[in-house]
Amino acid sequence: MATINPSGTEHAGFTLCGAPRRMLLVGDLPRATPLRVVLSGELAAWSDERVLVLRAQASHRSGPPRVRLGAGTPPGTYHATLEAAGHEHPITVQVTPAPLLSAEPAGLRFSGPAGGEATSHLALVNRGNTVVTVPAHAMIGLYDDDGIEMAFADTYHQPQDDPAKLVGHLLQRLREGHGGMLRLDVVDGAGELAQGAARVLSLRARLPEQLHVRHGYHGVWTLDSLNCLVEISVDRQRGGAVQ
Image 1 (spheres, one colour):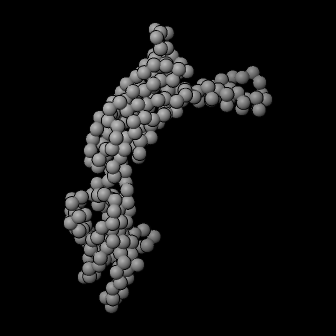
Image 2 (cartoon, rainbow, N blue to C red):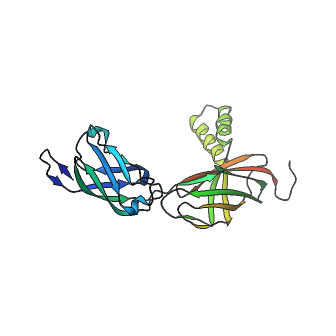
Image 3 (cartoon, rainbow, N blue to C red):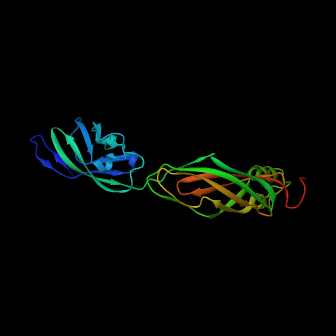
């Protein structure tokens, strides 16, 4: 660790590390001393400012000082300069991957027949500092929106008091709320999504056969750092009319 003592003796070894928006400045910093981090040209290209001003924490209990780099700063090792107490010190900057996807709308909604297909669209924006790969296919577990409530209500109304039988009945009803696996195909938009890029995905869902008409189901599509809620409404059986 870097040390600055009253006599001005210096020992290099400061490190700036972490995700771009939460970089921690690690080292034996002088307390209550104004600090300036001067970014190299390579780092400044991703940030709004070349010089970042911060103040060392008055107490180690508060943790090390934090620095915010540009959100899109790619992972890697860089260099910068720390100006403190009239001295300049080299800093090793270690930027870690920080994937960050946002979606519009916030979730996916499909409506169609049980056993049939439905389509939807989703706009993705890569706001992180790494390339994200959108898979062409995904399998998502579904559960009835009212499954848990109905399982407890039905168990409560059972005409028996045997704890083992009641627990068994509850578990059975909870299992009945499982809607099977939803096959999700990215018809258009699969592949790598670069830093700062946006793309509209065209999606097709193949609804499981066992879904019940006029029931709603939900699941989660985990796409890198994004947990996208998937909602399903079943309007009829495949090839049949609305009941």
